[in-house]
Image 1 (cartoon, rainbow, N blue to C red):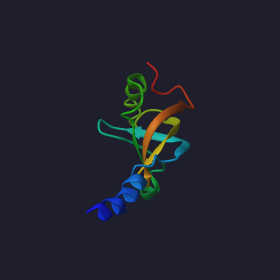
Image 2 (image 1 turned 90 degrees about the horizontal axis):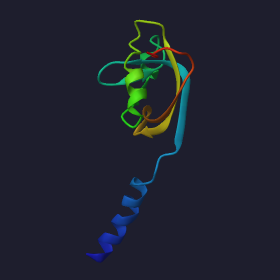
Image 3 (image 1 turned 135 degrees about the vertical axis):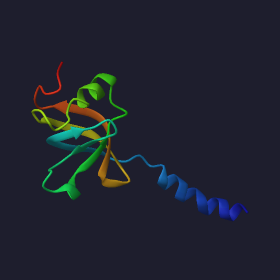
Length: 102
């Protein structure tokens, strides 16, 4: 029983390692009520899904105005990858234009 426990510990420790920080952008971001995506509409398989729940409320509210209908919102996102290169948990955002301002 002890031998199986020591074998399992390295696997758990590897799974809990923090992901390296990633920066994506600048690029156009489009959001709906459920999620945001960055990338080209011409290449949908290369769009990055951005999870914005860790951003400040004011930034999330501003992103919800980036629907893709009005002037494009151009941002750079800082965060960590979530499982694959096309999912990103946002920890910071830099706006390249004033879109989404009240």
